[in-house]
Length: 375
Image (cartoon, rainbow, N blue to C red):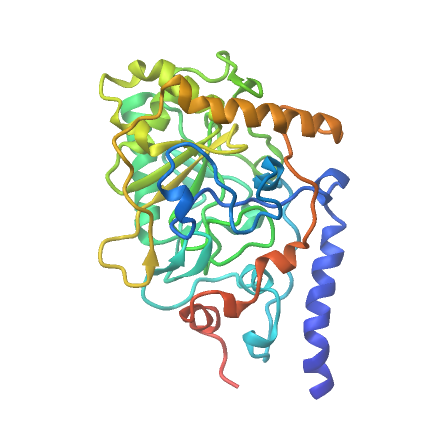
């Protein structure tokens, strides 16, 4: 038995290695998401548009260190750990990525968007009257109850009031939140959601379609949107998403932010909602909604309120224009399309960057083990 306990962590790590071979060669060198600015990154919190280097960046002088690249094909999850104290297993993303059900505890968003977990998570049904969930194999349609309520209301309002055909919903959070095996650094506390800018088709998608359908990029080039695909409907959808009081931030590609500034009138005369919409790398086929911490929820670390500046002056885009050029050149030099620019070579392993369970708030160990059979 002792030999079995010692060998299990090794088997879990080997499972992750073998699963990585399923990804395409290009996926295998793609870095993971770096979270949009959160409350743990104080220099970013007060900057309306500039993206200051994050703590996870290797080279603070290199714009290539801020990569936030989605990976369309999820890695295979390892089997849930059995009869082993979670603190002895590493890394944390293996632990949280292996648990298929929510913690049977009171609903709480614990910690920060990029360092935390979720208890009492609720799932968004995969089919709704005005939405469908994509990439079902990831099991990431979970969130705090407040996020699920928001998604259902947004889908209904966007359809009824703005004529949007329906939401295609990307990643929310894992059943117990926490760091993910692939994709994001944020989305850890059940208050983040990715929503495709592709309209929902007029039929119920099959499981295969949900896994293989490609989201449509809104870009004509790295610096501007394609007006054939980024229409008034997308403008109204983002405006609708930003209009609710509980929304803290919405992240879009810088070219989409510029287009929103130019075409905001189609969504009404009031442009105050644009202050919540922030430019961020690689959000060109979806937008990222982040909710505020629910009122009175202990242990949830939110973001400070936005300023009143809507960020639509020419000077607001100089930073992004410069760095998008740098990014596009780097992508071209390294064999990638400048339409989906990478900004750095992969370096530290995903496992090392994800950290250990002890790096998360203390309550996350209880969240991880809640409902496990007693030994």
